[in-house]
Length: 103
Image (cartoon, rainbow, N blue to C red):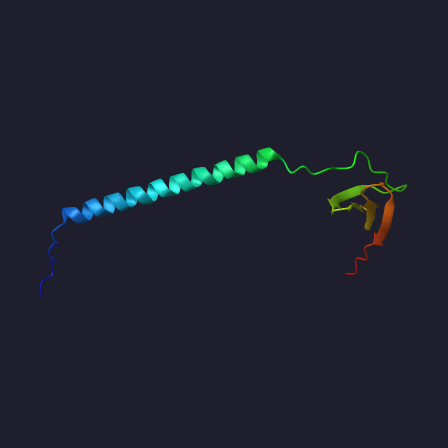
């Protein structure tokens, strides 16, 4: 048995083909990355147009911890485990939900 494998001859056409293939793949990836970055920039530059209330009047002793909103309401989660749901158009308190944390 022969211990030294002989080198196969290198086909110049195959090397040229692989070089073109790698170049096209690299160019495709770079162009795709540029397109993704451009889409992010144009989408974020437009802004969400989210309308936030001017002011929110919380009940006495309530401190806000989080805020969320829906189509015609917004809610404030307080540090004393309550969710206060307000009407978007009038700003009046619609509902108070007590969060029961059972461990």
